[in-house]
Amino acid sequence: MKNAKKLIPGAAIALVIAAAAKFLESLEESAGLHFIGASVIAMFIGMIVNAFYKPNSVTAPGIKFTSKKILKFAIILLGASLNIRTVLTVGRFSLTVMVFTLATCFGLGALIGKAMGLNWKTSSLINAGTGICGGSAIAAIAPVIEATDMDIAYGLSATFLFDTVMIVVFPILGHWMGLSDAAFGLWAGTAVNDTSSVVATGYAFSEAAGDFATMVKLTRTLAIIPAVLAFAAINVHLKRKAQAAEGTAVKVSIKSIFPWFILGFLAMSALTSLGLIPAGTAAALKTISKFLMVAALAAIGLNTDFKSLCRSGAKPMLHGFIISLLVVLVAIAVEFAIGIAPHGVL
Image 1 (cartoon, rainbow, N blue to C red):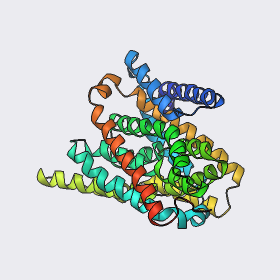
Image 2 (image 1 turned 90 degrees about the vertical axis):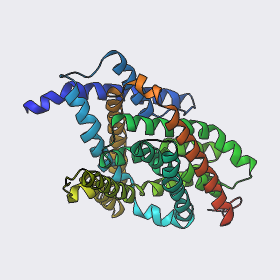
Image 3 (image 1 turned 45 degrees about the vertical axis):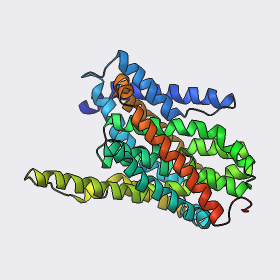
Image 4 (image 1 turned 60 degrees about the vertical axis):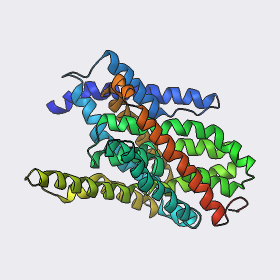
């Protein structure tokens, strides 16, 4: 109980920022706009607070708890929104395109990051955010590669910037190319990063495109599972390699390769798929998950120095722009190659 009380001040600050961010997002949506999601708003509010008020002995424990533990709990709850039946429904449309976009992100993305001299953790988070599902993928992978709050801030900022452009540009390009609802929905669902941005982009084209883009995006989100396991293994390998060079040994546990929160994520997804979690409950859990994720990103912002982020932020932003552009081009090229674009039907 005593230890729990120590967490309250810092966690409360993060939750208040999260509530403010969600409120600002709702104002934005009521005005018919959708440029900045609550996660990004919360992170930047946190950074602004950090510029005037650094975490101290009173607030630091709760901020750290929110950015680490609460973040993992949010990922577990996110599993309740993912139904395997959705994957089976849209898989024949989306999986082929997703194979190429994910290969672009994690293959070319890694090479581009290395060529630019980026920290591999920062590069990996940008690639994951672009290839899978924006903030959710970044949040899930960050703990297993032991990324810093600065790495997470770079990853989220880089994916957010290009998302903002795509919300406006995608519908215009879709109409210009004469894409059908199915072709556009698949393109938006596989190439736009964050879920909220996919929804905004899809419905800006048409209701049918928005519905299909959302289903494709949920299918794409399941790539979190193999991505987390792969990055956990890579991180362990790199640690062993580094310590072998130093003449020391690193202990490898099942937990380090198969994180516990992914088991929770899988369990929640399985329960939803089997119909054991009612649709209303699943929707409520998703809402809670999203809010807790916003709070976690607020906590990350509270631990991030904005001046330091700006000093070395050009390369991560450029990396995010290049890899996002490549994914957009690869996704539409594959659609044309397999005959879905321009006139494919649902």
